[in-house]
Image (tube, rainbow over all chains, first blue to last red; front, side, top):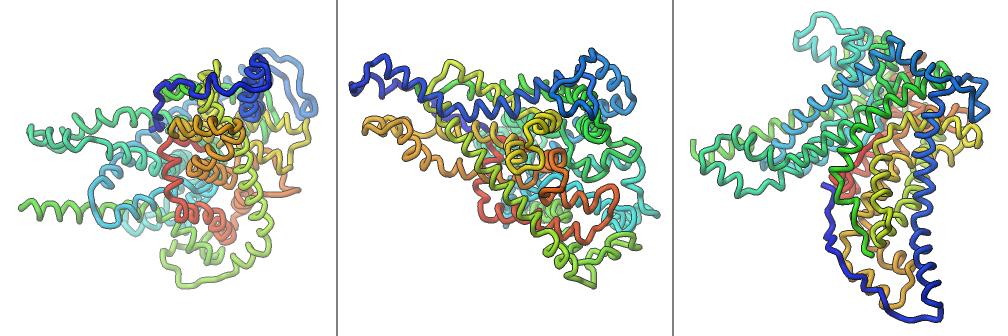
Length: 323
Length: 278
């Protein structure tokens, strides 16, 4: 997955060489400073674009904000008022619950479909490589565009999905995918699954490529059927990759925003509001930045559940560096 | 059934299944392309959807080309700016984190991993207020700085992993020749990391091109507007202009399609390294 570099500890071959006119002590200090020069832009950027927003979001969530306080960086302290008001609200509560169900359902379908496609591409057939590269396209589209495209496909009248369902005589009347709350949720879910499937497929496919052929042969000789080979050999072998795709898929889906806005704007009747879209609504449509920040804190806490797992999966990368 | 016949059957079945899967997965793109040549009355409120429409028009493209050119240009500026900023920040950092052993390496890499996880709406909500004070709203630099948040952590991690895999003697050889740290970096490490640099640049470009959340929150549309925002205004709460929206969507999709054709190897590399979008 993350390319594990050949990272055997190497002696610093540059050390103790080439005396120069500069006194040794000063040279070392210069040297250390020079190292940090490379890091300064990145540290500055991370502080500005990540650390400040997180800290400021926490501060905001405890403030009584209004359109008038925009021009000041701080507003009166409000205690837990934002959290109480926001989390006590039925729309926010349903958005939290919906974000959970949406994320779980997305991951399940993305995995099942993605794994099925990965197994399919693992079979040799003509144009396999071509097909495998085409499958990447959905992943590369701007998410907002994807949302708008699916809004078009799921239209009530002149919608392609309804046309197919009617042509197959599965429904007599067009389904109001975007006007009825339950269907709208399903529509957003289908769209999000469509977006995630290529990612799951490509990563799982590359994992399947690494399953040793001898292992499969040995299982076959021992009389294991296709299903047993899948569950007893393939899945255990590619488990590390499965863990990675689930963590990345979780991180990706829990903050879904563009797709919902493009498709339903959280409607009808807030039936497709997720935490991210509701936070946006509070901050940028109701201009209640404190409430939006409180909602964002909830999202932050949920997203950061993945952090220890993500860091653990990347634990090798925490070390290293030549000298 | 003989083994050969069985193998042939599997191949045929797999091909059929793959074609079916691709049809389902790629149909939305076909639908956009076809719709971009149809009139709005064919697309919205019509009695049925037609998979192979008989009438075509170029009027959507005429409108889009005359009205949306500046928006496409804005998207390009933002996307290129995002790629440049991402590389400017990520490449030196990746080099330092690969080349030197800092006491804080674990902390720095750990915080990059956490940064990758942070939802953009959290950043947008607060950067909006910060930008308001710094007068960065409705500006290219402001949007580009925000958009780079998609790719900077990813870029540093990918580039560093790549540089760590470079042969160790490359750097020491450079040092023996008396090259300074900076020269070793620009003359040797950078050229050797070219493919990883291209991968990161591509992803940063696509992130900048496809960004919606920062454009939506930080621009009011009076100074400039990227394509994603224009599409949204076509098909927002108050408007249903599908023909033109679909023609514009074709433009929005083009870079992804072209890059996939021209640089598929780099895209695939970035994906398998574990990219988190959005």
